[in-house]
Length: 103
Image (cartoon, rainbow, N blue to C red; front, top):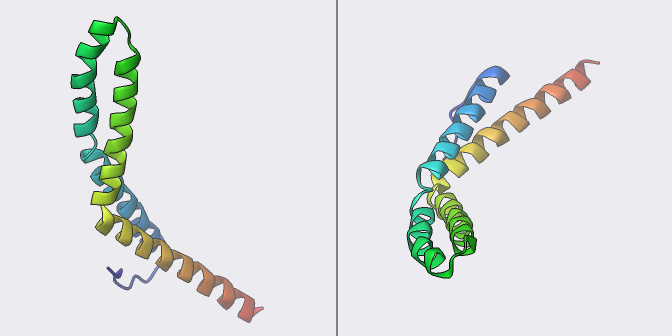
């Protein structure tokens, strides 16, 4: 996805911030299933073993699986963020080369 042409650097920075928040909300909105499943499975096991270790491992493993699943599900938001970031870099490079040409 290409970013629409934006004239000022401030508008481009705003676009990057919006893309970052969209990506974060996409990843975090999808991060609950595996952690909850791990806890549901680990609680009876922890009670039987009289230990918190299965709960800790299942919760951490589930959280990691949730983040990986969210990361792979949000490719459109990642591409939008990458395009917005590239646009800002190009604008900054153009601005610095323009200043160097003026000097």
